[in-house]
Length: 294
Image (cartoon, rainbow, N blue to C red; front, top):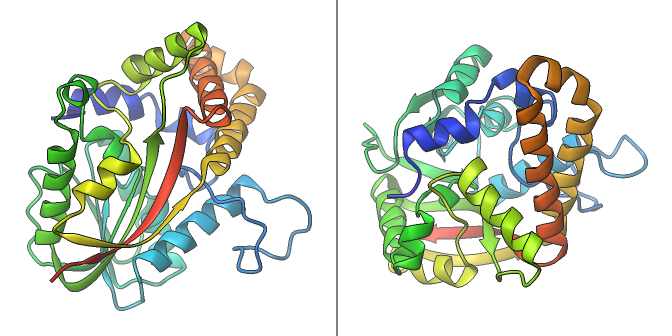
C-alpha cells in the first residue's frame, strides 16, 4: 500500500548533495514554524525568522507534543536525512533514538552523521518489528506515503491510516505521547493549470502517495490514540516552500550543470506549485499531539 521503495527512491534519492543545496543546513524536508514567539529557537538574531530558525522551532514544538525528555527512547517514523534525529541527540540529549526510512540515500546520510545514541534502518513501517518498545514517537510528514491516489479513490484511506496507528500503538509503552505532522489535502482547484500542476507533482515527484485529509486522520486514530491538540500551519508551509524555491533558484547554474536541466526545471515547477497550493488553500499542514490509549 502507498509508496513503494522504488517510489521513495524517485522522491528522495535524486542526490543528497542536490537536496543539501536548497534545504536548511540540517536538511529538514518538511514545514518549518515561522511564529515570531517568545519561545522561538533563536532570539539572538533580529529581523525575520530564518528557514534554519523555523525548522528548529518545528522540532521544538513537535518534541513538546511527544513529551520528549533526555531519558526517552524515541522512534522517528520516516526520519528523512536525520534532521530530527540530530536535534534529539544534540539539543534534547535523548539517550536512544531510532529512525526508519525507505530511502537508502537518507539512511546513508544518517550514518554519515554518526550521532550519539542514534540508529537508523531502511524498513517499511508495515514490516517494522522493534526489539523493545518506545516511550516517545514522532513522525513528520510520512503519512503522505501510506495511501496511493488509487487507494484513496477506492475509499481505503481511513483503514490504512488506522492500521498505521495500530502498529505504532503496538510499538510503544503505556503513557506514550506521539508528535505527528502531516500535509493536508483540502480541496480540488478549479483552475485548469493548478489541476495539471498538482496532478503532475503527485505522480512525478511523489509517486505512490497522496496527502491525507484532516477528517481522515482524526477518524483513524481511534481506538488507539487520543487527540490532545491540533495546530494547522498552512502559511508556515507556504513560507517554507518559498524559501526552498528561493534557494533552488540561487543555485540554478550549479544544479543545471551537476544534475541536469530537467532536475532543475522539475523542482522549480514542483516548488512553485507548492507555494501556490498553500496560498490558495488547496493544501494545508497540521501538527498533532496524541496520547496512547492504554
